[in-house]
Image 1 (tube, one colour):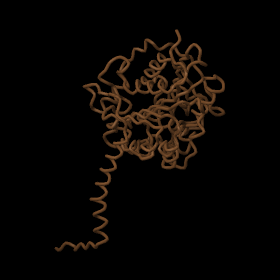
Image 2 (spheres, rainbow, N blue to C red):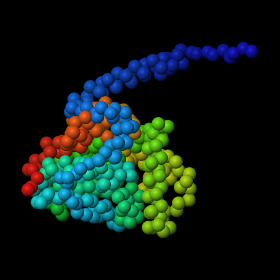
Image 3 (cartoon, one colour):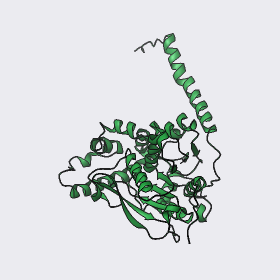
Image 4 (tube, rainbow, N blue to C red):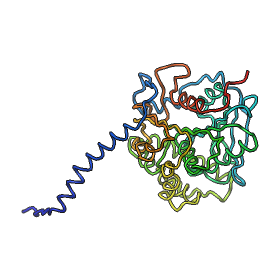
Length: 371
């Protein structure tokens, strides 16, 4: 039996050569050039037992915190649109009009009680900041405060909070910081504001931000990330069941058991309930990478090159490298929102220390804590 004769013409040869020889070389060159734009990383040495990205990611969520210097919080509700309120747990300095404020935004299925939120709050309060630990819509037991679901495109919520802090509270300066999904939200807000950002908004910080939602959804769907996706899906389904009890008839649960991935969830739940055509439309319009070139505020992005959930290639985008307002710190290790360091004390959680340091250096008002 004869094999069919394969004829390859000059055009096909050129295509194959470009695809399999030229493109890989260009990719490596682009990677090297982009890395050259990353500023020298502030000294970070991971905990010697945590050079595995998954272990770093997992333990960071459970590492105990003392929080002896963080005072009790007070509750504050921000109405971000008619019928929708966000709960903030606030640690106010004694005279808020004389101190900068730092607003913290958590990641997917996190809350104001996430350990990194508490850790940053303590460091920032000691540094003289009033701190607001926000719960995104429905999070932290606040499903009753809105008939809507939450998503990565709701940057308008944080613009509303910014306006209220400036107009009602007369806070002299405001900084925003977000982790993962929260990082995407604060960067999206900064990009949308662009040149119109109020001068009192002094900077934004993002730790492992999910800049490109489609890329992140595809990454978390990889077999190695099955435990993460399973955790998120279980939590999201439980939240939707609570919403269905609170808002009868608005959240039918038919077919919920057939949703197994975040992309399926976003296609069936998030997108249609948030004004998007489908998951692809949602991912495109809600990703901060689309507007990051328009950022005109001092901005700090912290990313780990071994992040298992957010592809590091996203941070090599020319729009980031070419923006003089953005500082990117990207050590080889850190996992997803981990960055547990060899050092102890306030440097144990490296990203939290760098974030507060960045805000303190850019504050123009006295930020020493009041006795």
